[in-house]
Image (cartoon, rainbow, N blue to C red; front, side, top):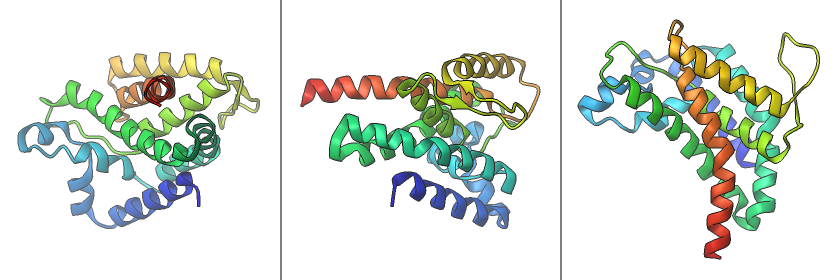
Length: 197
């Protein structure tokens, strides 16, 4: 079974458990204020497996499903037998990278918390764009494929703009930094492995 499928299964299980357990939900969500004061930095990781509702979960996991195996396969070509392990490290590191960005900004804001795999999924999507810049990306409300590099530029602009506005309950900063992480991780990890091995 691919790492992508395992991530989807684990994320769905944790999310569904938390849908019906408010105490678990609160304990696992990314809450920078609490993390700073209580040292609960595990939340940087656990929040990536929580979702607000089934639709939030389905949207993220569908995106991961469509692009995850492609990126996982590309990692196999880059890293050989280590490909699946590197992909798993990449995904986990993407969750943490996205969470750390919002931690820095919101660690003194008691009312801010976030959940979801969106930062890591954005990393997978942008890794796919790196490997194939013209890969077709289709939005639900646009009936044609958008070339990956065009979508990427628009996504980064929109995420940055909305993060500065901060007028909704979406963690756009995590989306932005997850995407940036996803684009550069394969480049630097490939160079590192080439220099070491």
